[in-house]
Length: 302
Length: 298
Image (cartoon, rainbow over all chains, first blue to last red; front, side, top):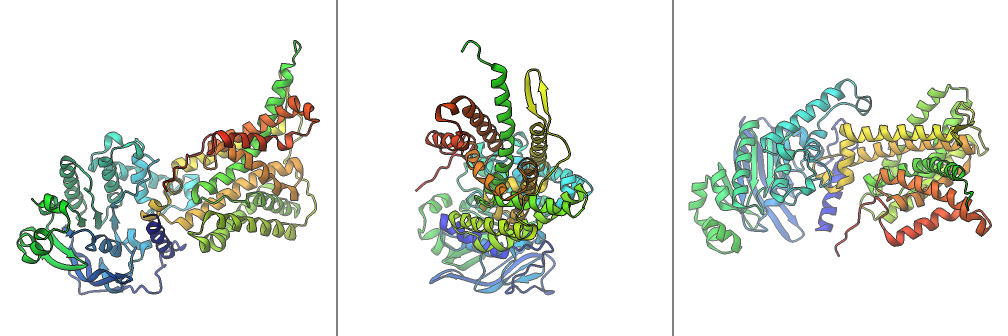
């Protein structure tokens, strides 16, 4: 895990540019406005393939997500779900295919522009700041989109003061949305796991995103916690009209929460449709529900 | 010891504490950089020299005091950005020892450059008041030391307010807490590093002015880095509070030791006492008094 995160941060750093103007598109990235996308489509993945050495993580995957839609991506462990999210958030560069976000097409999504494109995410393994308060953790989520210059911040003048107040206001609103008011000044590391997951969600929501990527937001939660988390995900969708991409193992939650579900198996999309359609799909039953890849999933599905 | 001179003890103690403030100033520069980038910046002493020499050099060209101060600050900011671009960025994800060696090299470059540009002779620096001792009751205190302590306190207050209340300050704290998480939420590490190096340059400037006013602005300023090391060992490398307390401890204990134990060794123990104290503490608390305990799973 250590090595993997280092590699990711190295890739990330390469993409991060000093430039504050955001004109920091890497040479390989094309940036072509596409008129043909329907107005309701927030995110479109076209024919994306990705391999690590000889291991195929994604194979010609298509996925489109409409505004205001909760779109689940399910599949057994190693099916390529997290890889897909990492492609959308620019951590991985696909071998082929492209990603369209808000009408712009990319071969590699530029990480520096994600917040401007309105994309946020949560993490399967929490990436919170354990020694900061809940409020600070959430406020970090807008730190990238503020505009006051460094000097203005130091003197506390002009835009800086207004912005600081606005940041706080937004952070508080978001904390209220996920019902964390009572612990807003607590140090995150001292909170129980379920609440930390909510802090992660709040941090993703504070920038009022258009696209929210949720990587197993309910992993390790109790049934009650999962139900509440599902509420918050719906609330977030309704509040911001955002497109939600949800990776989740709990089939019950997924069937209940999602508008459409895509099923991945060995990096290939084997089904795509409404919960009812997916439930009835023979390929899904064979590859996923019927044939045991993972004991836990079968139990959850039962 | 019935006639033990308590006011003399107090005088030594206060003198020691105040000189400790000067150590803290240097140590804080280290802490800023270590906290946010995990680099032990050996060039901090060279930055102190560079800042002080630059300031004096500009001042000696007849530029007014505050303009010189601003210009030097600007130069330290440019230096901070340059270091980020040319030293830190190419070495991202290298082991800490590589970065440490790089800062060692940087120290030589800065020392050389400063003396190349401004000359190697000793420059006097007068911050504008006489160092007259002030009598507090029976205790005599150096007014310059008091001034230095006030400057240091102001600077620490400013830094704390900056960390506490600004967006960039929040980003600093986030990066210091977890670099990977900071990257994951889209904070720009290179920008933050450049700002941190600039802040460290600012601290170096303040330390350079105070030390320069006392010792003269000269090459030996860069050697105060060696005095900061025991302070950091005592206080922990990643705590500003630790740097302050460590500095006070080192200052007070070495003066007291010099006066009360020194004669037993023939004097001069002030020079090495801090290192011995640091070594002793290392045996008991390897992470310093305020440092974060390092838990490594193998």
